[in-house]
Each structure stands twice: as C-alpha cells, then as structure tokens.
Image (tube, rainbow over all chains, first blue to last red; front, side):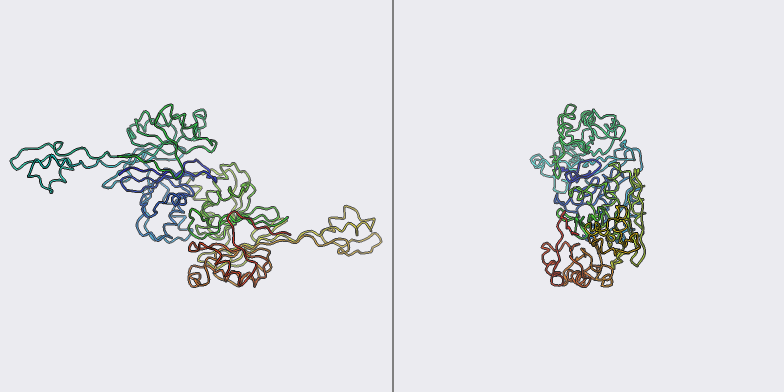
Length: 306
Length: 306
C-alpha cells in the first residue's frame, strides 16, 4: 500500500475559470480523507473519478470561504445520492453551526448522520484514530483559528521470516500473529527466541502533513519531523514577505525552510496567489531551501511508496 | 437595445464535471440581473466574461442548494475584488440569515452593503423598480416557498417625427421631451396638435419571465401573458409526470402548454434531470405544444431584439 494525495485545487481566495480553491483527497491505508473543501470541490472530485461514498472523514483547516464554501454542496449531493452512513467532519469551532443553519434554511432532509468534531485547542491534539491511522491537529497562525493536520499510519506489523521459522518445527500458525506483533517466541523447553531472529521489519508507516494557511511558524517543525510528504502553503514569493505576514501567509522560501528543518522527504507547494501565473518562480524559490520540492498539478496524484 | 439572457447553468440538483446548476445573467435595458446562483456560478460568470461589478441585483427563486449555494462564494469574491457599491439580494424569507450567518462564521469583513429584500407574499408583488425596468414576483408551486420573476421594460418614449415637427415652425427643442412623453402640442393660437401627428411609436418594451422550479401552475398564465421570452423549467418528460408532481416539478409538455396558453414569443427550457443526456427528447416534447421552443446552451446568450 502507498499513500496517495490527489490535489483538487491549489489556488487561494477567488476561484476563476482555470483555478480552484483548496481541496485535497488523501488515501492513506485505504482510508479516503477529504482535506478542505473550497467551492466546486464536488466537481473536482468527480473529475478525479473519486467514489463519494468512500469519503467518511472531512478535515477542514479553517472557516475561510476558499477552504469551506464547497462543503454544503458536497453534503447536499451526498444526500441526493442516498448516502446512509455517517459523515465525520473535523474542523474549527463554529463549523457545526455553519453547516446546520444552511441545512435548516434550505429545508434539507439528511439521509445520514453528520458527526461534527469541533476543534478549539491551541495545542496539537489527536483528532481521529482507528486501527490503521491516527490524525493530529497542527496549530497554525493565520488570521482566524486554523489547524493543519498530520496523518500517520500506525506502526505496521513485522513480516514473518518463514525460512527462520521453519527451522523451529514447533512454531505453529497460531503463533504467527504474536510474532508479527513483535513478541519473542518461548519454546517448550523455555528457550527464548528473539523476535528479530524470526521476523523482519514490516513496511514503513507513512505520514503526510497538511499545513494550510499560516504565517511562517517554525514551532510546527517538531510535530512534522520526517514526514514522507509535506504540503505547506506558499501564497507569495519572499519579495512579498511583508504582505504575506500581513495577510497571515507564508512565502515559498519559508515553506522550503520548514521542509528542510523538519527533514521531510518531499514538499508540495500550494495556495498560490492569483498574481502568479507561472508557478515555477515559487518552485525555484523553495528549491533553493529544499531540493525535493514539487508543484501541485490539478487532479494530479502524488504517490509515496512504502 | 435588446434583451439578452445568458445561461450559466441549466441542470437540476447535482453539479457534475459537465453540468451546472441553475444560474442566468439577464441584461435588460442595460441592467445586469443575476437570477439564481447555484454552486460554481461565479466561475460560470467568468467564463461568460461578465463584469462582476455591473451586477447590482440578484434574484433568488428559492432556498434549494442548486439555486443558491454559489451565492456566498460570489459575495465573498466581490469583497475580495474591493466592491464598494451596494448589492441588492431579492429572495425568499430566510435568505438574509442564510448569508449573514456564513459571513459571520467565516469572519468576513464586508467592503460593501448587502441589502436584502425578503419575499413572503403568496401573490405577485413588485420586487424592484427603477426608471427603465420593473420586476414582479411570480408565485410558484414547489416543495418550498418559491418565486419566479417577471422582468419588464417600462413603456418606452415615443420617437419624434422630425418631418412633421418642422412643418410647425414654432415647436422648439424644449418641447421635444413632452412630445416623447406622449403629450399633445398646443400652438400659440390655441390649436391642439395630436401627439400622434408629431411622433411615432417608440421601440417595443421587452419582457422576460423566469419560471423556476414549479409544478404545472396554469394560474401564472395571466401574469406572463405575451412576454418576449419565457424560461420555464422542464425537469422531466411527461412520461415521468407522477415523479414530476411528487418532486414539485414540471414536464416539457407542461412547459410548452404554459408557453402556448400565455402566448409568449419564445420558450427556453431548463432544469433538466441528470437522467437525460440527450435533451432533444425534452425539446421535441415541448415543441409539440409550442413550436418556438429552444434548448439552453451553456454560456450561450439568447438575444431578443426590440
């Protein structure tokens, strides 16, 4: 299994005929998570041939229109498609009122439960967890309360070394799960066989950090240390640093610095101001700080292998 | 001057990669009116190369998502574009709360005034009027409170018949406006010259009726009698009449009957269910009732000449 990030939109503020506000679809451990939902996201999901009903969790970074105005339309479409399983929406305090008042005023009948998980902590908290994945908030510094999200696969099981196991005739198939879990094997005569003699390291647990709208905030570095993929907004070039700070955004150079200092494996940029038409200037600026930086591609998927 | 209707979207319910929910841009007497505003309307406006700041009045038929979910995004974009003139929004009771709560929760600072004109009458009322145009509501019968809108140019001034005028040496340029307004001319000797001897009929006052989501409702016929252009929803073919009635919609045949009985000059269909891919079946059904029926074209403009 790999981690796959599909970019549905990567521009800031105003959608145009050719640009789309922020939304991403993440497949991690076969969970499909929608991250932010600007206007038109449901159409972008269709263009990406995403299966709507596989999306059970939506993570909203903050309540600015270019990150959330597509949510009510998607919720409404899921109703019309006859969804009957719960939809979990994680986002800042206020998001429940934001959605529920719209459903009420449009007299929408919900065919499924919407479960809101409202965040208000200024510290990183565990937002969601199941047997394969955990998601933590990444507190950011924007004009309004904003979180990024850190998506991490849990440690994966060790792989059995069958050649080694077969040397010990008495190890039964019933013992395999314990071995995968890392336990040593105790033989009938009491001899302890080290787990590492019977198994090999399992596949790598993958991780993705989504750092939405934020001023340069180096204190997130310990949180996102060594992630396989980092999305970090880079609304402006560094020559517009003052404007970036004023509007609560980062520059491409700053995104590169964060990526380098956090020792991430790959950086993808985004949330570009509409003032830029040739994004290579932003790419080149970030690359001076961190070489393995890429530009987002609309409906393009970035795959990270185990 | 002509009347121009640009279709921004004409599908019902769920937007897809190739279909767009209801929105229209009407130019009548050089006033630009936006009619309904489904998700993605602002992008459609851009594709139509519309000038956002020329739109001062928005008319919303009802609070269903496919007619209104694009409104908050457009309002937000107008802010970002630095609009400073008032925006008038006419729509059903509840629309002010619907928009204002979203602006509040997204902490949007409005750079311009939004003036809401909430409708709740079950009768046709005058919704807007200026020196050139008047707009009346058309009460419809849908699942929720819904109005269509009738846009009418006011009676236009008569044209001067200069040859006739010059025969009377004493008629001065200062008298021309009175003549255009239809007044007779009183000569110095007291003789009255009939206005019709000095002027000719002015250009025709044009009219457009927008009949959004509704069950077949023949009592609107007197209201829309003889309009130059009628948009009437036709979500289904008549073979799905039962479903149409249940969901509060009309069939193509019914749209044709309304057009014929109202003696309109041209009918444009729309709000098609996504079950139809070849819209010619809907066109053919309506044409059996009313020959001068056309299909909408995306970003296509229908021009009605004086």
